[in-house]
Length: 218
Ligand SMILES: NC(=O)c1ccc[n+]([C@@H]2O[C@H](COP(=O)([O-])OP(=O)(O)OC[C@H]3O[C@@H](n4cnc5c(N)ncnc54)[C@H](OP(=O)(O)O)[C@@H]3O)[C@@H](O)[C@H]2O)c1
Image (cartoon, rainbow, N blue to C red; front, side, top):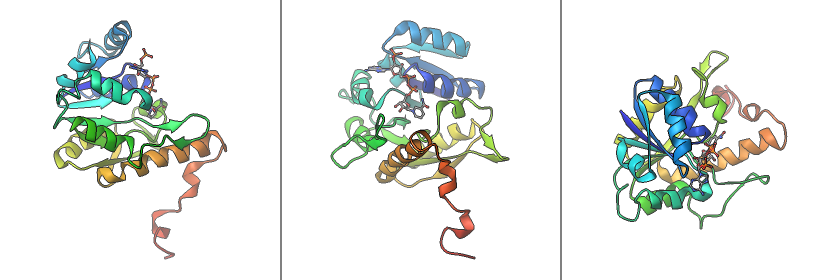
């Protein structure tokens, strides 16, 4: 598959490198052409660098990997207003989390993922936003013998199938998180667990019981 990446930072590096290893072609893009070119060179011959617009048009899937505060401007530069992202698979890993407070930026009741879908007309799938970038670099992310589960929220079946495959390429297990209307819950989950990990120094995983206790005791 050809995958365009909007961004040339840590998440672009981590996920793009995994996908190149899995046999995909990748185009990275950033506001600094030098940084994008350096990243593509590190990824190897199956990777190249381009502009935001070129990366958005490159693939059968596009990963949005810029700060949440820059997302709409970058999508605009990639051709959102001209309809260039309409109907395309857009993977949104952004976290609109207020630094230090671990709350969500207010978005008039909608998640950033829904706002992006409304602005671009793309088939947006929210994914990869809950774990730290170093987890996405692991080969594979397996903990205590269990592959990391990656929840996906999106409305388009074909887009979800594509993103499930991209999750499996990392050695992770895709999990159906529901439609895009639930993407805000995924954004809130990230804000909440990051707050537990960073502000409270707590083990966020410990707040959930084993699944057999999820709907009442055995
Ligand atoms: N890092 C994590 O652990 C992690 C985990 C899950 C999700 N996320 C989410 O993934 C997204 C990317 O995170 P990251 O860690 O890859 O960030 P990063 O390393 O800082 O890279 C961000 C990329 O976006 C570009 N960028 C920054 N501000 C921009 C602007 N105003 N206009 C255009 N481009 C801009 C950067 O360009 P320059 O190189 O020129 O600055 C860089 O290419 C964020 O939304 C983050 O919340 C991160």
